[in-house]
Amino acid sequence: MSEVNELSYIVSNDVSTSKTIPHTTSKLGLYLVGITGGIATAISVICISFVSPAFRKICLPYVPATTQQVHNVLQALNGCSGSLIDLGSGDGRIVFAAAKIGLKAHGIELNPWLVWYSRVKALIIGSSSQTTFIKQNLWKHNLNKYDNIVLFGVDQMMKDVETKFMKELRKDCVIIACRFPLPTMNAIKTIGEGVDTVWVYKITKDLK
Ligand SMILES: C[S@@+](CC[C@H](N)C(=O)[O-])C[C@H]1O[C@@H](n2cnc3c(N)ncnc32)[C@H](O)[C@@H]1O
Image (cartoon, rainbow, N blue to C red; front, side):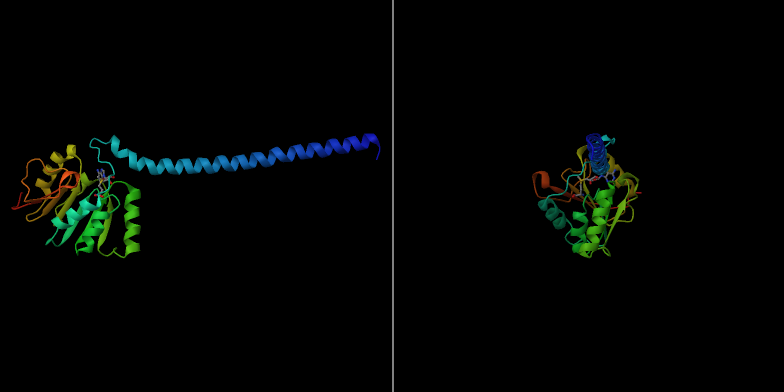
């Protein structure tokens, strides 16, 4: 090979190598950007459901009941039968506990991820015939057909929710309020103390 030919061989070889490396790198970079972008979007979509309650007129965030609170609710339900609904059911822990003691238990929840989590858990633990999970705003759901109501609410919603109860609940319905009591109704029982306190109320006459 002449010197000139040898040089042109080296140059052409170099050019092809220098073209290949950036090409592979940019493809890898694109994949990485795509993957991280996808993960970031997925995390944001999931987080929005948990953060959005903060922007509602009444902010009711996802704070799951403690084991003691669930225990107190079960104690309050002692002797109760029929149906139950947990207003803002979170991961479904109160619904599952109520189903275990023989109640037909329902959860209503705004956060779709928590609704799907609860539905899948119901399938896994074999309680889907005893439980249902509704994805709906609790303020838009009529409570007339339930025998027992559970609410782990916030102070700012208790007055409005009491008005809703007065309008919709039927005679003998039992209400269990966790952490915050109803402002004007008289509790028939109080169980526990501090943040785990539950107040039990009973509708004694037809309110309509
Ligand atoms: C304090 S957590 C209670 C969770 C569950 N009841 C427990 O004790 O573990 C309140 C739940 O209500 C849900 N929530 C907030 N606003 C709601 C609304 N308007 N309708 C239905 N659910 C709502 C939240 O997403 C959250 O999961």
